[in-house]
Image 1 (spheres, rainbow, N blue to C red):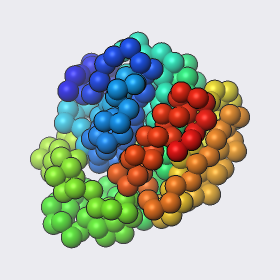
Image 2: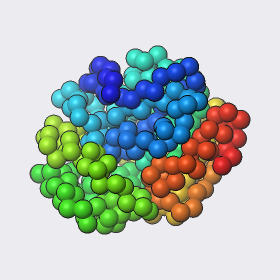
Image 3: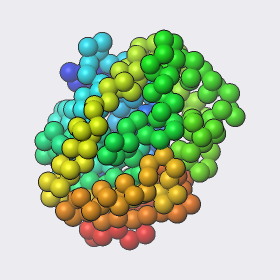
Image 4: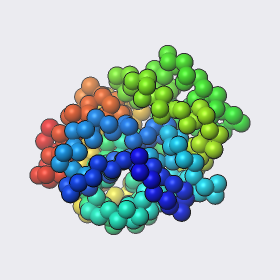
Length: 282
């Protein structure tokens, strides 16, 4: 893993290198870049894949104590990351985390040439669905995050609807999830960072305004949504595609929110086609 030092702290990231078009892939809460391992394996021969580990609980390097880790704050960290690595004409790909909409709304999207939004937080679905509500409740209680994630050491707990059971149709391998949760199990500063993020959700009016700002994103955009999603409503994907002036919608069956886990080959094929031809063909 490489690392980059930003005003908010140090980010670790994977960079496959090469001269191909740059694809930056972003994960969600209590995960790391390994969410994209199958997609990166498919794309790395043609594209330069850059996968940062965002400060959302799966990171190993705590952020500075005064770092802004609200949703807009993390969006700013993504923009600073692109600036620091001088990445241009980037295809920004998001899963689960919806802060990329804030990045556009804040006018920090000048380095983004194309946008790929897979099932993620949108409109006022922050924190999203039953798992998000459970996480928010835990974050408000003293020691709540520590307790909630310690429960996830018990493997059957991981498939409950209120934890990870509705995030992927197929169980994420336990060794992968162990890597995601290890920082939260062992480091109180990582739990502090996650708490700041979870409790830093702006008012509903601000969240809805971010989506409206997508009308100003005048570059190609692809929305890939899980048709059976139980956490991110499928109608949100349709609405996002309508808001984006050059938006294209693909709905995938036989998957839940974490499409990179449930349908990585199909997702990779759509991303490749979108980048090479401007149309998503699976």
